[in-house]
Length: 70
Image 1: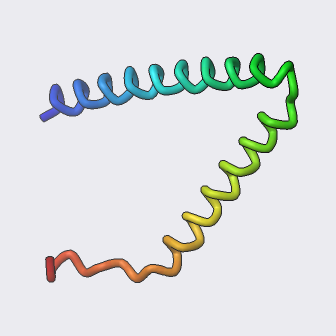
Image 2: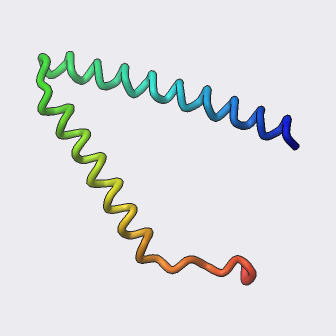
């Protein structure tokens, strides 16, 4: 069980690192494409934060299911 968990965490860490690298490349590409305009990047970041806040607020309103009934 411990080896399985370690393997899963290793794969998750590698996937996270790859996604981070792809996101950084995408942001760099967008920054270059807009001629060095930071407003687009800040707007994208602000939109992401607002989306995360909305998801969190909606998730707080939803009543969790009882797992015994599933």
